[in-house]
Image (cartoon, rainbow, N blue to C red; front, side, top):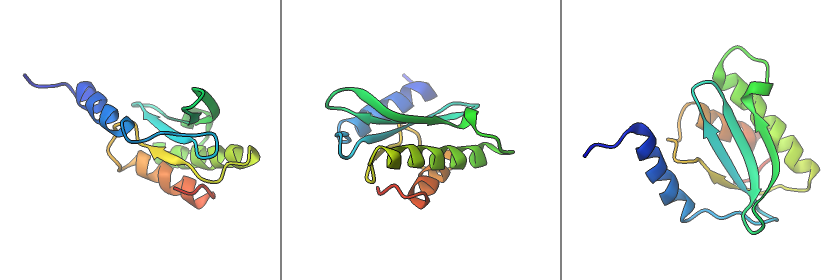
Length: 114
């Protein structure tokens, strides 16, 4: 039986989530990528609360990669306002390339440690 792309991503995501856990001091930076946008959240898994979020749909830029980079800097700014410097990166089962990698690199450049 062959699996669809979505099933493969879900399997990868479950494998990653078995190891990645966020706390209040070091929340999980969860990334979701669709065909049109990238959405990221900082999540405290102890309480199940989203601390901050950002979406590339809210940003103005020409390419999806540029929008993802702007969303990363927005999320990093919101995190620093709440006193968060270090996070655990959860790529959500997506491969670490393209917009996901651009988002991660921009978040690091904006001051988040992971």
